[in-house]
Length: 371
Image (cartoon, rainbow, N blue to C red):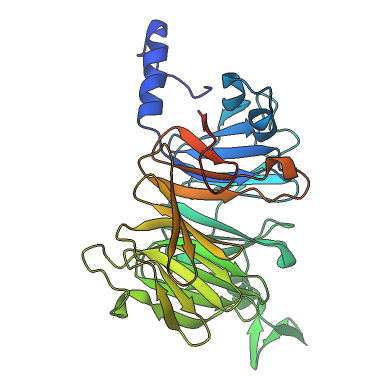
């Protein structure tokens, strides 16, 4: 690994140091490359490892094929979230987002393309960024985390803005709705974040058919935001519904996913399928331990959290299968569905270990990648 070893550690003990690192490693985030042949994994030490899925899945694969092609220090603290555009790998840490060119990332000594920090309330505030979400139609990136807000960054300009319908009113004024604003006020407007959560934001999801974003947080609320008006249009306080509430686990929402008018979310409250238009819980999934990641896949819902298993659910709530992995707890799932690499179509799962489990179909774990 390329992470700097403290000077106090003799060179002869480097192997021991690295073994201890792996023993206490947590993999928070994953992202598949645009070509579908590589997987990036980010850990609690601020490292990003790039694995070759095509090499690991080859019929001639060796144990070395399951090791990183390259590992580099991306952040000083944990890499909480990652996403990929058609050219870039974007990674989030404590208070900052960085971009890396996928075309250059396999070269040793790859340097960041840029870094951005959201406009926080004070210069002393360095909250973690727990979630990144791409909005392709807007060419923008939404960030959320420890400051309880959602920040929108224009990927073309690198600026943080919240769009609202406006028009010029002449002589240095702008019309925003029915109000006139001078250019000084406009500067504040452009920096405004989406505010509503009262505690950490843990997760984000995009409703692709409409410009709306869902956010879930430590406050136990799922909030729906209209990106056209930059307003909160719906709030579901999951823990207040008796059938979902599990007070012994807390009220926090750690994961959510959407599919048209449907949402599934979980955390402290039970993993639950909701009809968004009516704000109605329709299915309570019978699993006791908190779930940390959830996604829709074809006619199934996949979830993972405390425990080794990836859970496969029917929409009716029936547990179709539990597929064990190698980590004692799972924090992220990644489905590689890039059309450019159908031979690398896999599900990967990672969490409280140095391993990334690879499932070539949903029925079993084929092998594990390892830092």
